[in-house]
Structures are given as structure tokens and as C-alpha cells.
Image 1 (cartoon, rainbow, N blue to C red):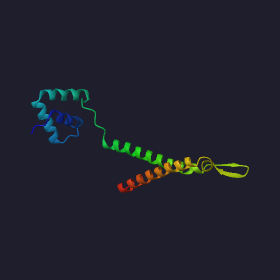
Image 2 (cartoon, rainbow, N blue to C red):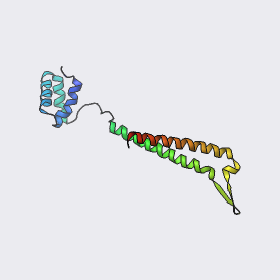
Image 3 (cartoon, rainbow, N blue to C red):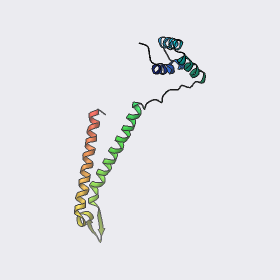
Image 4 (spheres, rainbow, N blue to C red):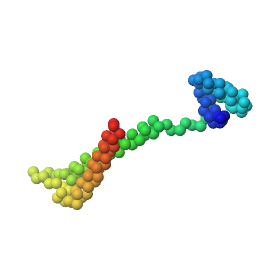
Length: 137
């Protein structure tokens, strides 16, 4: 099976960098002898030091880093929301030596809705924590 031009362009990078094995060098040189357009491309690339190749695809390490950053951001966001919405109904005011819970006294339904949001945030934190433990981290 003869390699395609795209495969040979990929091998050209290794060949021109000097990191190719003896077999790869032989394959590139033989392909250049039998294909004049590839030989011209090889000469031009070695003369200018620049290769006309497609940009490399985003590698998996970068995708993993982005996913990890997003995960840490979301986990921090849910933790902050859980703490904030849990404590918000306990907002107090002190007047004349008396302590009054604002949400409990004035708008108890709002306090319940804050605790509902807090519960959802804590559940999200727990699920994310469980996923990290499942992955063995």
C-alpha cells in the first residue's frame, strides 16, 4: 500500500526536523523520487523552513484543562450559592436591643424559596463531589 500525499506531508515534519528514523527517511526520499510535486514541496519546505500544513487540532490536554476549569468554577459557584442562600433567611436586624429576623418576620415565603435554591445548590455540590470521587481524584 502506497502512502497518500497527506500522510507524506505529516511525515515531512518529522523528516525535516531530523527526528525521523532511518526507515521513515528512506520512505520520504523514495516517495519524493517517484512524485515530483512532493519533491518540490519538500525542497521548498526545507529551503524556507516553513511547512504548509493544516493547523493542529486542539489536543486533549487543552480540552481537559478547559473542562477542569469549568468544573472547578461550577463547583465553586454552587458552593457559594449554597452557603449564601442557606444563610440569607437568617438575616437579622437589631433595634433597641431586640433581634428580628427580617425574612422570617416580613416575608417567610421568600425565606422558603431561598432555602429551596440552597437545597438545589447543595445537591449539585454533592453530585459533583461524587463524580470526583468516582474518577478517583
